Length: 288
Ligand SMILES: Nc1ncnc2c1ncn2[C@@H]1O[C@H](COP(=O)(O)OP(=O)(O)OP(=O)(O)O)[C@@H](O)[C@H]1O
Ligand SMILES: [Mg+2]
Image (tube, rainbow, N blue to C red):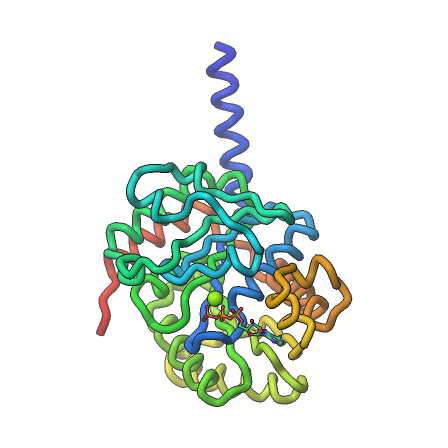
């Protein structure tokens, strides 16, 4: 009897939490535009704002989240895929309390993960999502099937670009592809990183938005911009989390503004949709 009650209580908690849970994918066309540093610093700020955050390193074959967090996790997604560990066992609690699921480094087979295994990873997350408010997915750069699947499964996809014209061109491309598959449920938005001035960022956003509007009839969100900040490069080199050590640095303040914008956005769609979307996307997904 007691057990039954506990069980139903647990289910209630689960279903309540589920309404608040949201998944945010961070991606880019071109590599090296600042996704991983942004993901980790965003996680830190969201946590400071009272959210329980999980980071998934979905740059499957070239793990980076562990490096930015200066951690040496014991297990990673490879252990999950081989069945040696379950999803709970591969969550690594880092120094700042940012929990993350590490990817592996240097395993070519992870770079081209078969659909079933991509599905297996996302499906395993079902066992733990009710412990968190927000899951951030740091993807690899470029247009691969697994990146697109991680983005399509999210409530929000943040495309990161820099003002560099090649990065901007690649971000048009990835926005077009995602909006091509996009269901009504996912919000697509842009961040311009490493800017010298606000005008330059606005111009890039407007141009991208116009291209996507022409192409798909939909608009994208502007999540904001992040100034170029030497302090960030230093933090990566010296292995500390900038937003934690220097909350007033330009970079930290800009990420905090973006964090608030992301939280203010439209209320996340119900959690069940996350899994339904995964299944639907997988069934409909075709590269053409
Ligand atoms: N706002 C910024 N100001 C100054 N330097 C920055 C800024 N954002 C990122 N960088 C620099 O860019 C480098 C690459 O960043 P990061 O590794 O986060 O990019 P990424 O998009 O995750 O790369 P990859 O595509 O390889 O995964 C950082 O080491 C840092 O030196
Ligand atoms: Mg990265």
